Structure formats: structure tokens, C-alpha cells
Image 1 (cartoon, one colour):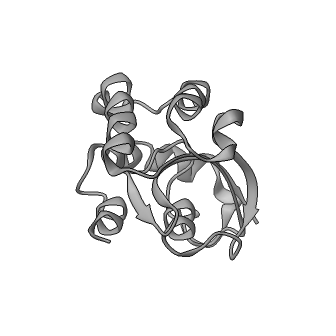
Image 2: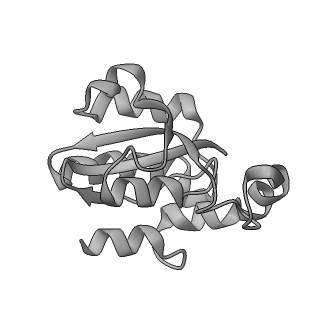
Amino acid sequence: MGKDSKAKDSSKGKGKQAASGSDENASKGKGKGGKGADGLGTCTYVKARHILCEKQGKINEAYKKLQDGWLSNGDKVPPAEFAKLAQEYSECPSGKKGGDLGWFPRGKMAGPFQEVAFNTLVGATSAPFKSTHGYHIILCEGRKN
């Protein structure tokens, strides 16, 4: 569960460095998202893509591709590029759809997945984290009430 704390801490992990760079833009463009300035933790629905792998080594390989292509430069991962990696790496049935989970409400996803999904800025990619289903990376595509 040490991975969960990494995903939440914006001072650690290249994925969150990229996310923190988009904090200003996300809060300015999404003012009606909720009570918080950045809308985190206050929205009711999130739109996300994810990559799910049973083995930590495989999720780390996918994350390295995200880092090498975008995150290490502070760039956001384009949804179409994330979708290609999801099709290649994800072991979830949603991988065939580029990892697209669509819109889902708070309370639908279990434990750490929900926590990370609802606390990742729009356009940002989470660091790898573990859940009861395996290891995930999430790309947040939207939030609404």
C-alpha cells in the first residue's frame, strides 16, 4: 500500500509533477466543478481511462513509456496515446476500448481506485498504485457534479 501514498503526494513521482503543473489551468477552466479551488474531492462523477496489470513489473513498464514520452517533460499524456498503451498493456476488458471507463459516480469504484480517480486533476496521469484487482495507472479526463 506504499504506492498509494506516492500517488497522493504531489511532491513525489514524475506523474504527479506533471499533474501539479496543470493545477492552475484545471482550477481556472473548471470553476463549477465543486467547492474546492481545483474541484478535487468535491465532484460527484469522474471520467477516466486506466491501465490494469496483475504484475507490478508490467505496470511499471507502461508507466516508463508514459514518463519517457510525456511526463518527464512535464507534458500531459494525450488521451489517444494513453489509449494505445492501455490496448497494449491493460489486462482489463476496458483495455480493448483504450482503458475507457467512461463517467462513474463516487462510490462505484472500490478503495484506492476511487481515491486516486477522484483526486487526480483533469488531464493528469496518476503514478502506478495497487488495488485488490492489481496495479493501475489512471488518466483523469473530466469531472462533474
